[in-house]
Length: 188
Length: 175
Image: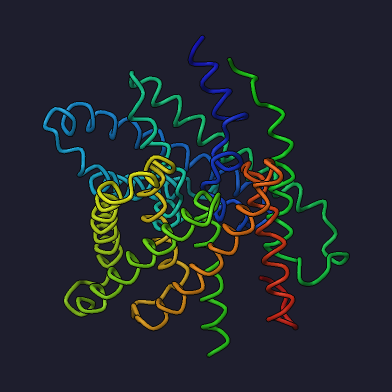
């Protein structure tokens, strides 16, 4: 039962984009094609899961017993680079279904992955860490789809020129974040 | 060419600002994260500029990532030693922010020259805008506590960017 609470909390009330303010630029800097957004979200979620498993094992079995946890950032960034390579390989294997064209740098520059892993290694069991990673990835995908749908409904011609582009997306994201505050307390 | 360069700079600056939202709850955190991120960016680009001809082209990104992580760890140790109150407030977000800002700026500049002047100009703009958001949130947050909540950062930054682009960029389409 704890797992479900944790999953719901990370997707809705404790969402990484809206309440922790991480990974904002990858969310607002997208084309409005739903299928490629969903595929990119799935790839980010896969890399989060793999990364959380590796980093939890590395941290609890090697870094903490040897008392060298100040190396965490360097080692995790190395793992992040390797996992990003792996994810790009997977996305190339998707062949004609692949609409993303994601690059290694795009995954490395997504601050959600590193943050979710660094928070996840503090959990008491590896399953919590993995659930936390899944929730972070799903929440990211959800917000990406929602913001692209909101932008589909905005008539670009009626916006003041100074607001078009990034500013209107930021304001829409802010209003969405106020709406998501209503999910607070959904998981005890 | 010049305007093309400007556009790339603006995109990188925007990406860096959107990444640094976490630190804008007050002027102190905004200023410290801005300065630290600028130091990481400048040192990394300086070292990459020296070693650019000595490494194979396909490995440059890996070198950049490792170097950034290394300097980020050093900055985090300095934070833990001398500024414990900021570490209490931001915690693990400090290494995440420093690392991601450095990587994301290099991605959106998208050039293999690592020019220092460009990075310096970008850092100054980054510190100024981050501190601007921090000042607004700290001043208004004293009266209305809702400003200190996460969503206000989006809305304040949206209006700030719109005002800035309305003043400086008369004939533009995108920010």
